[in-house]
Image (tube, rainbow, N blue to C red; front, side):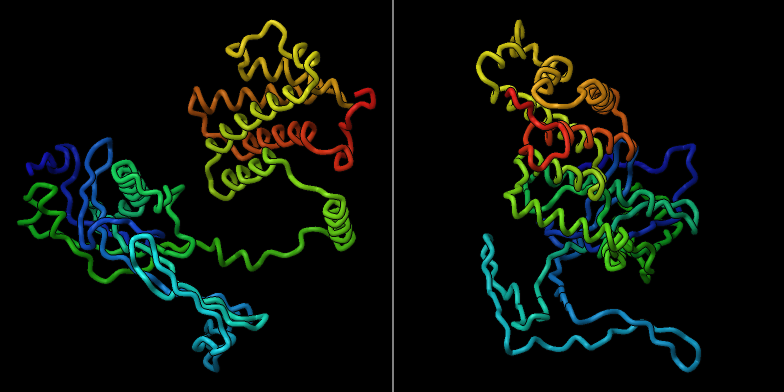
Length: 385
């Protein structure tokens, strides 16, 4: 294969070596271990090296915790409250066979109420390679997310492998980043990019970035005063005892809230939430009696049912059947529409406030249209209906 890779541009300082970023990437990337993939184009140059596939043991120990121990010399150490010992004999173990034919012990659960859970996960060990022009350069950390993102996207496009999820940011929750360097010899610096980087290998790897995400979840606590917590518990029980269930659209909207604020994919969440609202409005219109349904869409063909028309023609007609002032809600719905159009047509990167506005408006409208009156404080259906 003839390479098209060249050296740094004439205006760039010559590379002196390679900055490596090492990571255990969650999931099984189904390519050969110990393989290097060079990336060059569209403003990005470097490599992704797939090292091996590993299946670490994950232990959930409900009766254990991290503790701080103060030593006599004044130092502080982090220890386990109790050692993690072997699996109790009183346990249930499950062997499984994957679709590809691999068989192994997959899960073990101790029988006690605080019984530990042991299971095997799978990661792909990889490292990215970025050339640097200065010894203290952090270029590798800057490029790591882009290199891995482009690599995984190309892998998914070529191999259509849904076993590996597309990254939404680099997952470092439980897989910290470690860095290392390799410095070229004078002879290596004279080689073309693809030849010099292929022989690079890091020395000792140093821990660089770790996310607190999962660890700080244990710090969560009640976020209201005791009297409000009591009311929250009472309200929850009252709903459940009276047959409360989320509609399919509202349930999907809750997943989109997670996508936006936990997954960090605000643009996708906004587009999907507004599409969900369009479906909900059409479904609500179709539930109307035939005569009322015709009024809401009079002189409209299916091609006329744009988002603008749904918000300003169909929605007001639907809200007419409920007690409440529709004007403020329709105004908010048009603001929602403007944000969505900016995301779709102008590539807007929405703020948290804009995302919250869109999701809140969709939630309010779907709740009005789809929840029984007994679960709504206002916007109850007019008795004449």
